[in-house]
Image (cartoon, rainbow, N blue to C red; front, side, top):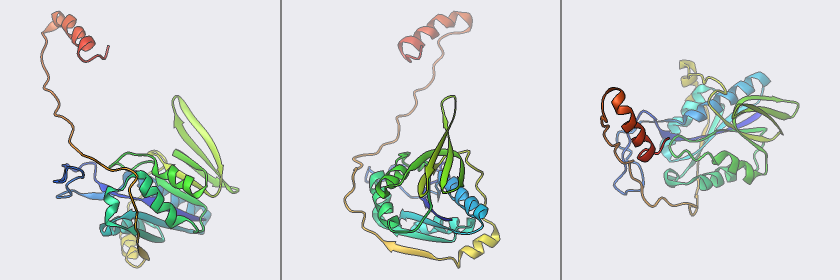
Length: 251
C-alpha cells in the first residue's frame, strides 16, 4: 500500500505567542515549533495501515520553510520511509487554498492508494486543506475520521456526528483527514531517530504564486474584563439573573 501523508510545522499550543512587528504575523522569537498534533494521528494511521498490509511505503510531504525539515525528520523517526519538503519562505503566510494548490501540484502524477491529513492545523484552524487537495486531484475525501479500515479496494471510515457515528465508504484512491480519537500516536524510538538520519528527505523549491487570501492585520483578543460581586446570599440572585439576561444575554 502506497500512502502519502501531509504534515505541517506549527507553534506548540503551550507556547505564548505575540503579534510580530508587521502586525500581520506571529513573532517567532522564543516560539517552540512542533509537528501539528492532528497530523500526528494521520502519520500514526499511515504507519499502522502499512504495517497491517505488510508492504508498501509511507511518504510525508510538507509545505514550509527550510526549518520544516525538523518536523519531517520527526515523521521519519516515527517510521515513515521518505519525506519531501516543498520549500518556500512564503509558506508561513500562505492561506489554505494556496497550500492545497501547492500540495496538489506536488502529488499529481504520483502513484498512491491513500492520502492522509490532520483534520486541521492548530495555528489557523481552517479545516479545508485536505478536502481541497482531494478536489484538485479528483479523488473522494472523508473528513474528521475517528475509525478507519482499508480492504478490497475501498475505505470504510467512521465520523462522529451529533448523537452518534456515521459510517462512510469510498473507493481507493482516497483522501482522509484524521480526527482526535483515531489512534494514539507513537513516540519516536532512539532506533527510529538514528534511522531517520539515513532516510531520504527531498527538498523541492516551489513558487506558491499569488495568495488567494491576504492577512490584513492581526491582533490579540481584548483582555477579559474583571469579575464583579453583585451581592451575597439569596438576595444576590435577582440581580445576577438580570445581568445574565440583559448584559451577558445567556438566558
